[in-house]
Length: 596
Image (cartoon, rainbow, N blue to C red; front, side, top):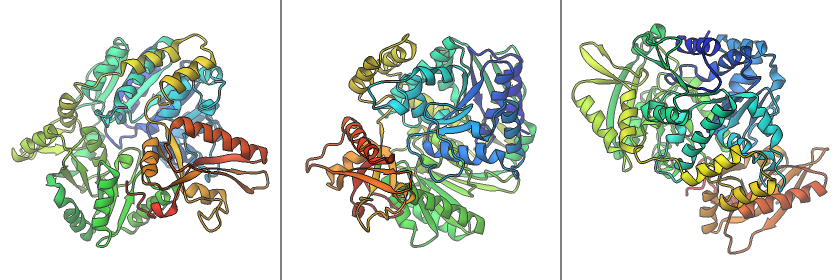
């Protein structure tokens, strides 16, 4: 069973949706949007609008989590009711466990039994990162990224026969001042235009779409859009562009949560989080930057059980941190998880209290969505909005006005209502206030958009043209700085990295954008480049190259070294499993990171 809004969306897909339209679904955090994807795909399959589907997500961590915990687990005998509905929808489309695959830049699922990776989208259902999907759509197949020949026709055909579900779409608006924001917006425009022209069903979902992003989609699609969102009453019908759905059951659950919202200074965060954890509460603290998260963690770890989680941890440390959170949660003890925004989407942990910088309303609402997530009535949700240096004064000002006026904020319902003689404001106000103050100057990167159009609409561009455009003019930066692999310690050296198995090597690695390697190179801690492979007997092979003293990392050099050392492994009969820059072991603090 899925919730009423999603049932209405599924009914719309079956009865009145056209594949040249964009379907926007806006529903609260934890509502079940991700688990509804196969159900919506089933309706498109029944109408012969799509034979396959691609579930696109912005972060690798969400891809990993959703692929394992939703898609694969739905085929287990003990799957619960929501996953049973997922399995039924997949099976009605003729999709079995072996027909579901994932694609992301770092094979973090190397150890998972039953995992299937598909860079060319050669599966009926694929869970993919946004970056991988963009490369494949724009004729730079991820399997051929650094090759002279781009075999793009087959993967493009698979996209053409699929429905595309872009989940957690708000995350492209997390950093509107970032240099990559305009490119990501330009890609969304190009994707919308491609989907409409090719009649590829495009379904975009988030808890925090807001009127600004909705207006953009309307503009890009030339009003070929259908919108389904939660509201206080049912409005609209089968022929209407926008449909508002009331879900009384969900509304009752949401209103049973007692929300307490406070504004706090940066200096109060550690003490207040510590006090809450000492009282037995589960506390989530999310900071904008890794350095801020590390500083907050170090102020807490000697006083209460505390876990640190961010994108610059190795795979092994990240897995250990997540396992530690699971253990503390199962024990019912008070603890603090300090993290960066990597936890704001796709994570199903349930906290009693949250702290978040008032820097971005989309992220703020998503983080608070981890509070009282799996509990109904009787749950008291404590929300602390941090007035940090980078805080949005528009957000802080609106919250001060609401709270000082005796009103409250509902962090689970988007609409306003009266309760106990006072007004309760829905979280949509935060989205609108922030959007009007911070998104007004955000525009699609025109140069990037022109190139995306060339790559997506040109008839049959030769590989040399694509290589010159992507590798030359764009420096392999389609949406943002390209990810590279980093390995802590030389795995080929005795006693370092425990390089006795593929798992050991993978656990000491991470993927991050090139800027981190640039910082580490400036500190003089980048030792070189290595490729690790495994032969048919399971033996590891290494190909290592020490870097010159004056090391200037670049994606071109990364591509060259990757090809060079992968070729060396192939000569030895080994299949490459990982290749990346080697960083001195002493530069990395276990469980903490590099500190840069």
